[in-house]
Length: 90
Length: 391
Image 1 (tube, rainbow over the protein chains, first blue to last red):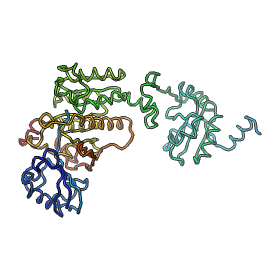
Image 2: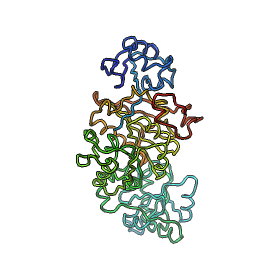
Image 3: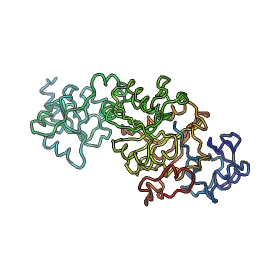
Image 4: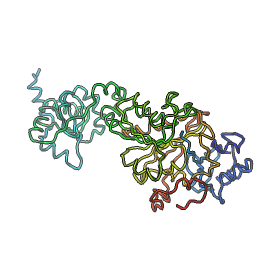
């Protein structure tokens, strides 16, 4: 089980939860588990079978694109951060 | 008991001396020594050898480690005539400095030989008082404060992030602040945009911020640009000469434009963004660390990217994130500390929690990668509209 941080822009899909638990030995399995419970997340995280280009996924602080992408292993008890860009500044 | 003469003779026998020409050769060499001026403040103020650090003899023991942390590196000590520096050299040897020499004949002889000198720049009494809390910090000090006064920082946006960032930079004595903002102050801004006030409702934000800054610190020169940053005006604005850009924009097209311009012009960007209870801060140092496009190659579709105007923001959040941006900017200007380059700092106000993720350069980045495909400004509004871009 890992802890997944949900960014503010995706919280409508998780019923307002800022942090949820998810299962999976890889990022792919973890996202599948998340999407099975929060179907609205699917289109916002995955694009053509890959992590959507406007979202970054970090496992223990490292961008999975610099690791093995969706196949990046996720250790038990890891913290996973989903991070879309935010433009706000005013 | 030896008298002064005898003691001086004895000390000179225990230390090594160089003459002015030898000292000059050492200083011009491949591995120059640390040059320490041990004279009093008034002597230093009348001129010193370039590259010297000033450690008055009375503070030698307590301050030398700051000036010369590496005891194996050679130290050349000088005073006015070569006597006080002889005693200082002996003290440094006792402190474990392995290679210390005293400049025989001192500064007087150096000058008589026609070797270069320089007048120290110093703060006047009013500035000494205003910045006294900076002067007390060894990492800043008078030299650092002079650097801040020489620094030029461009703020993109005088809103939520730009307000606290500009005020702290102004208070710190950053000599020149540029403000790019094409908006006017309205009532919905005042819940967080502390550079403005009820009295400036309806004014240009750039003018309103300028008035607040000038009231806070008249040492700061404010340059206002009452225009929206665009592909057409960005080169003109950057040509005015800026050391750091503070990005407090409120939209994606401007974020990508600032990024591309900073890479083209090689200017570091201190980036901040906020939404509701959460903020992000990092530093993009062109060609050294990742850029914004390495982090976010494409903007999210508009429906996934609500602005603060649509989704709201806790009033204090820009205060926190904008202050962190000011902190990074001051460090860059002073050349101290570890910047956030390569790290994205995330702040969650509800949890009162900071976390950090690692950012890496993307070798395939279209702007700062190995084979850049974006080498001039593009249509940023279209790029961020969700329609396929033709860049």
